[in-house]
Amino acid sequence: MNKVIVSFWEKLSFKRNISKVRQAVIDYLKGEGVQAEMKDGMVVVLLENYYYSIDFDLEGDYPRCDIFFKMESDEYAALELSCKTYIADRANTDQHRLSTVKAFNDSVIIDTHFYFKGRNMLLSLFYDYFVDLKETVNAVIGLLIDELQEKQEKEEKKEKRPIGFVTNSAASKKKEVAEVAAYKQVADD
Image (tube, rainbow, N blue to C red; front, side):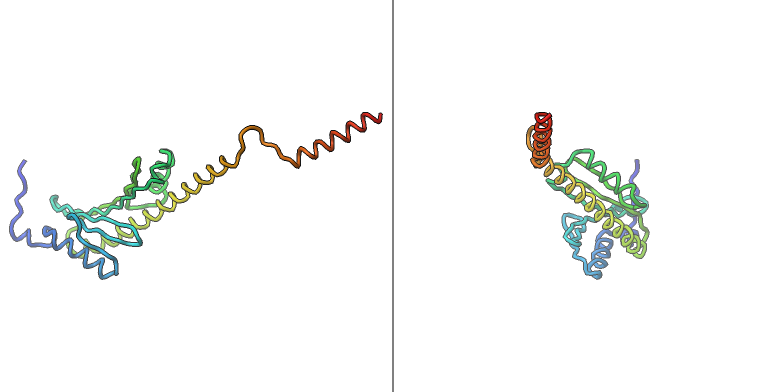
């Protein structure tokens, strides 16, 4: 296979210049009041106490922007596999979304991607896809909170249940009164 040789002038264009692409996204996010910075070759965004990562692949015919969110949690890891797949399946099929939820043993990854041709296309698609990813993250976290509350309620019900037979003192007193009354009636006859 021959690697496509990109000319010097094409490298200067927006869609082939990684620093221009990254800077355009960072400037856009900072203009919107969102904290964004370069870290380990990716754009890292802090929004509402959640970190999102943005990466670019300029190798193909069209540049690609990948946006993803990863959540690792001990509470999530403690859930049963059926609960994890339920959360992922529900978030993936609940509404028409551009993002995909992937459930793993100890983490959840939500990702999306799009291709762009120029700066204007990048920024308009970035807005749409980022908003969709953020809404998907909120939906997954809502489902996770519901599952964790349900799990906690089940555990509390199990703890309240004594070992052995469950007796109700009021019901047993009524039964004793009825037995005494029936015994007296039998004895009087």
